[in-house]
Length: 298
Image (cartoon, rainbow, N blue to C red; front, top):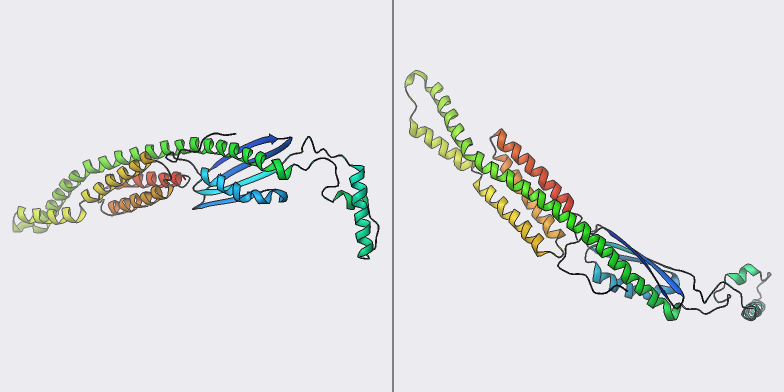
């Protein structure tokens, strides 16, 4: 039986699979656990009808291992060595007699066939192990399947975290290039503005430098990207901090990715530079990749 419980500070993917089987007193139980993306935690169990009373225990144990996603638990029961498919003649005769009596009492016409008898629980000989050992076999197999399910989700989660961090690093590089390009953009604007004003003035004389500086200052205030760059840097730090803290991070990372996208849009509207616009487009692509990855995180 699997030991221990999952580390709550680890980051996991919502997608995973685990399978296990356990045998107790000759009864074999097989359990499969599958997980896929879901906004909340949804557990769906499918068990044989005679094991339906186990569903609350199955749900409770599964909740110890999964905190988000849709988790399907499928339980199947194998044949017991001590309850082989052999007919007990005395039991069969007793059942047949009881059925004939019931048919006479209820005045039910028609013959009693072997097919009728074979469909009756208890017709076969052997010991019915379900009530006594099935819970132990099922819960043992479930614990082992959940442990295997968790190991796969941990591996996938670690891969997703690496990808997100790579994308964060790329955004940070592009953001640094934008910070470097921003002052040059203002210098070029000042030169172009002075040229345009000089052409407009023509023979009237030289352009007033104070007027040029006034226009540049107004432009600089309108299209200053320092605030957006600072907020983007802060959001990148929040994403990294969330990853470092671990645990259930999917929803928060999705929110932070939306904030990153919003700041990129604002930055793009202020670009007024082909070079900066190109960097912003690249940043948007990286943010979208982050959103795709964090959508798989628990």
